[in-house]
Length: 89
Image (cartoon, rainbow, N blue to C red; front, side, top):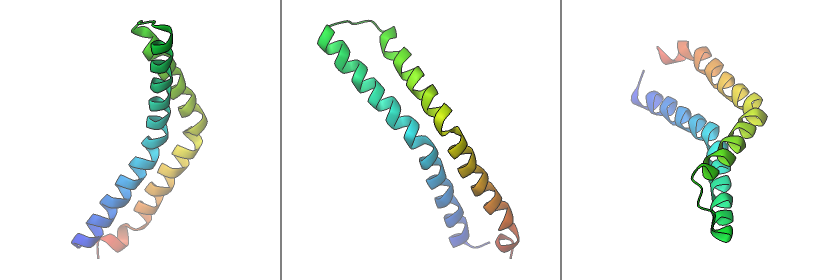
């Protein structure tokens, strides 16, 4: 296995990790921003108010995107296993 192959595997693994985490991070960011704006407008400074909407938003995102995430990760793993003979040459 040469250096280019290892770098290619690492690059594709990083891309998959980014694709899997980015929707959750964006939803969490938007939910936190909306809660912060709501708190600034109403001057409610309750600490637990910031966590509950984020948890609900992330849970709903995971619920809706879980099939896509599982398919993406499964396809990557299958492709990686199928290419093992090419990697050991």
